Length: 94
Image 1 (cartoon, rainbow, N blue to C red):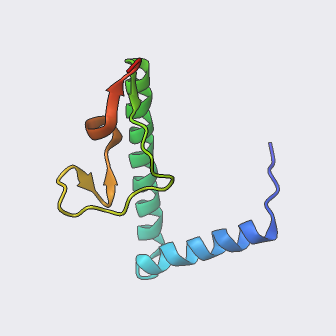
Image 2: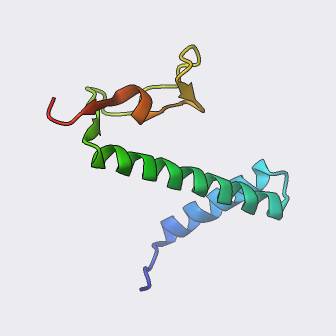
């Protein structure tokens, strides 16, 4: 199945590639390794969320339309993100 990207999507991807390579000091092998690691992390997060949903937990709803800025004083936040399962998961039906 082939998906056609618009020119703006392509330039966005090109810019993201350039940024990722620059963050790894131009080392393509390090860039690929970092992207693989990030993908594995996201796959693990997805599996944890799916398990929580299957167990009857759902993320708590917030009144914020956007994510809140990182809170460096909160030990539950890592890399500017709060782990949904540890902090905001509530039993379904509440």
